[in-house]
Structures are given as structure tokens and as C-alpha cells.
Length: 203
Picture 1 (cartoon, rainbow, N blue to C red):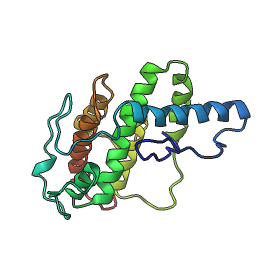
Picture 2 (picture 1 turned 180 degrees about the vertical axis):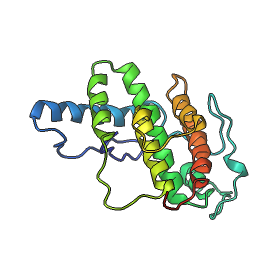
Picture 3 (picture 1 turned 180 degrees about the horizontal axis):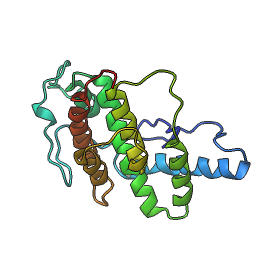
């Protein structure tokens, strides 16, 4: 949940050091959590997205979207995730939402399958959900996005603005045991629509 490292689908890349906590033991545990999260992305299909494929719980509707980029790839040169992102008008927003939702799914997998690491993952989630200093007044959409982050970490009661049951249900859905990256992609698509419906104005 904090400091997620990037991967290329075949390798795991981690920071050379972690100083999240003040003591070495805690930082070593945090490093193990990050390693496990990244390895779990490889073993649980984070890089296996198929354009327009249905998930276990959600049917795909992404092919019906008309984004700002080209949605056709007749010779198959573009990665499926790039095709997915290009279907949305706000590519930056959908990229962020997919990372959030897929991270929620992977966190749930690690919590279930690695009980020895789960307490440290929970501690990192707690830390990531702490209130942030606001240097400026956020818009309604920014408050909604911040609430999505906090709810994805498992603390909806701390959200700065109330989320709809639809948004919370989508996050809960990708935490289910058989949820796949296809479910995460469709859930992110649905959260995209909920997010852009929030006025990007001061409350």
C-alpha cells in the first residue's frame, strides 16, 4: 500500500532500502511485505490482462467506451493494458484507479495466503491511511479520490467524504478470493465513471 515498486511482468524491482519506520526490524519486515506484494502480482495475474475479457464477478464493458485515444489494435502491437487505458478520456485518472483497485486485490491475496506477513501489511495500511497535511483546500473530486485511497486500505470510516455503497462494493468485490485482474479492470472502469461524476470544484 505504501511505496509500491514497479514490475515489468517478469521481474520484481524493489527499493535499495526502506526507512518507513525508526527501527531496523520493522523496516526489514516492511521490505518483506513489499517483496511479497510484488511477487504476488506475478503469481496472481496482475500482468495477464486480456483486452475486453470478463472477470469472475464482473462482465467487461470497456470495449463500448469511446476514449480520446485509438481503441483498435489490429496487428496486436500495443500491450492490452495500453489499449485499455486508451479507451478513457482521462488516461491519467484511469491509470491511477486501476493501480488502486489492483493493489486492493493483491493486498487481499497476501492477507489470505501469507498470515505471517499480514500483521505488518496491516500496520503499513494503517500508516498509509493516516491523515495527510493539506497545503491547499481540496476539490470535491480530490476528496472523493482521497476517500477511495483510504477505503482501499480498509478504513472507510476515516474517509474525508462519504463514499457511495457502489464504490465500497466494488472495492469489496476485488477482495474476494476468486477475483481476477479482469475484475479489477472493470471495477476501475466503473469507479472512473463515479469519479468523473463528482464536480471538480471546491466544496
